[in-house]
Image (cartoon, rainbow, N blue to C red; front, top):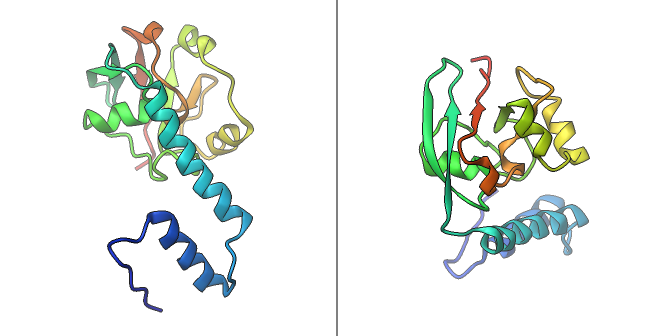
Length: 158
């Protein structure tokens, strides 16, 4: 099956056309609408919460190597890691569809985080080295209170 994409095609239109072809339907599914809504929400909330103010966060590799970085307040920890070439996979691109951005927090930091959603809890069940203070980096936004914290990147088993 081949697809011809024009340069003027939006990613939403392309996705809609691919789903229509795969499913042989003329209307996109409700799952597709949720997918597009998630993309739009993530884009708009990232813009709304981002600022130029930064704090220092240290990512700790599984081997103990520490990487202090400047993290922009409002950004997700996954994005901060990627912006600073930290090895934190994030295979789903922050769409809460995997557990490859799994991070382990110190207890006092963990206690200050917003509660986990059911979806995040489900994804964490798939994570390696799961702990009581595990969270997904795509779900945690940087706040001023994070200045000086350390987050550990667990060994992914490979």
